[in-house]
Image (cartoon, rainbow, N blue to C red; front, side, top):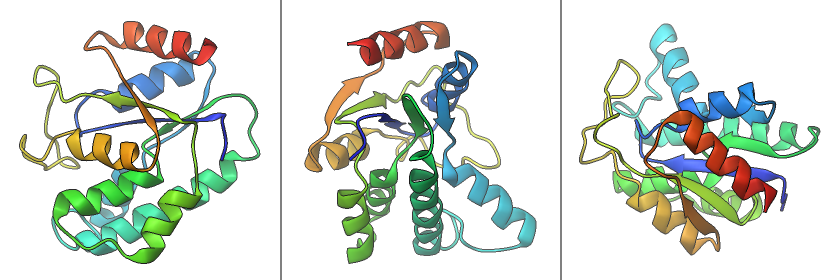
Length: 177
């Protein structure tokens, strides 16, 4: 477990990536979400490891990339903020109604983050769809991520529904405690 590794999770379109960008601007080491990069790569290459094509393959690609990022982050100093963590892959499979392969459940239990996980709640006012985000609002829920992280022993800290600077101030204050 790494007490220096903090996860920001939640549904798509909840402001996670904007918050991560602000925290990076403030000098924190940050790890980007793997899912959007995988979607871009698959769309460019004509692949089907996509959430609207082969969800199982998409989950496997996320796990592979997230495990690599987790390992690489060990070399960084200070607090490191992850835009989603390995348990998000587990939550994604549950959200899709797909079986969770044992190796994914094992990875989610073994690669531990700080016990405090920041959850960006679904926020209708800021939710937008684009070419990489095709979920419906019904799918855009943080409930499964909350349940997944809680079941793995993490303590959920919900982010305020506020502007990016206020959210970043909130995270910084929590990290200082």
